Image 1 (tube, rainbow, N blue to C red):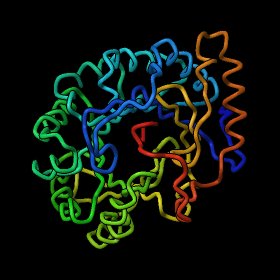
Image 2 (image 1 turned 90 degrees about the vertical axis):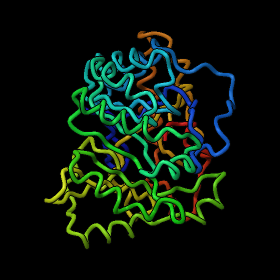
Image 3 (image 1 turned 180 degrees about the vertical axis):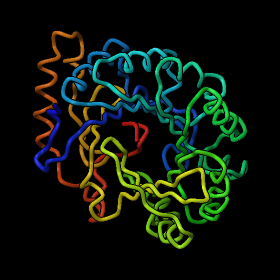
Image 4 (image 1 turned 180 degrees about the horizontal axis):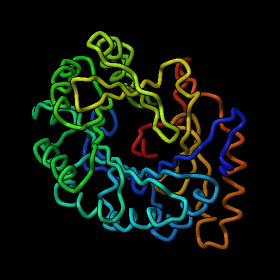
Amino acid sequence: MSQFIDQFQRKFEYLRLSVTDVCNFKCTYCLPDGYHREHKKQFLSLAEISNLVQSFAQLGTKKVRITGGEPSLRRDFTGIIETVKNTQGIEKVATTTNGFRMAKSVADWKKAGLDAINVSIDSLDANMFYQITGENLLTKVMAGIDAAFAAGFSQVKVNTVLMKGLNAHELQTFLAWIKPRNIQLRFIELMQTGDNHALFQAHHVPGSVIMKQLIAQGWVEKVRQATDGPARVFCHPDYSGEVGLIMPYEAHFCDNCNRLRVSSTGRLHLCLFGEQGTDLRDLLQGPEQNEALQQRLISQLKTKRASHFLQQGDLGGTTHFAAIGG
């Protein structure tokens, strides 16, 4: 029985857990100048992660997504997957990665218990991929997707931020790519943060524009499942793949919120936007602290707002998404 229910009767069964804020890519919309460490804190240890996930699971969390930065930069990443997967009550373990280590390691991740994988690919054109990410690694990332299917993943999700003047013209190329492949292509609307106002103004493409194009081409929306993320998912009888749209500026986007976030240094974030987080680390040092940790979590959840209020131009305190795992 979930104890993670807020004052708006939303049930929280999904934890997005960042294990590092380090990333080796320099994506224009996230870390255009590359990663610069802004704190001296150590990232959560394996023991702290274990204590944290146990407490979340006991309160009703069923799904954990391991995020970053780039989570596979942690040397103990496979051990983290195994630890989370072996936690009683956790039914699904997922990760989001830039894919640069997948070809080499995805089979090991699968063996450790990884159930689902999201890969960020913002262009299928090598030159545009380099322009957006700062890395000439498209071939390596694409090989990683092949390796994921070979390792036994039945579906791979691909995250793409379509941006006007950069890669927005690739929509039909992406759709052709997923026609024979069981890939859920997730178009994520560019979001404004504290440091990207000019980029947002120049390149933002509303998700509603993409949705109209999909519907015109015969795509149909699927019914949402309880532990799904925020995407509205569309399918087409002629395609093996699916399309997910993540549209944070859409009315009622927050009505079905089902996820909480913990940063790589142990701060609880009730929303990707708008607040500085609550430190949990002092209660992660042993299983004997789990009860106190759970009480803090329940207490904080009571303060969660109805919405992120992005529609009204509220950017909150988020400077870039690598800090709390997107």
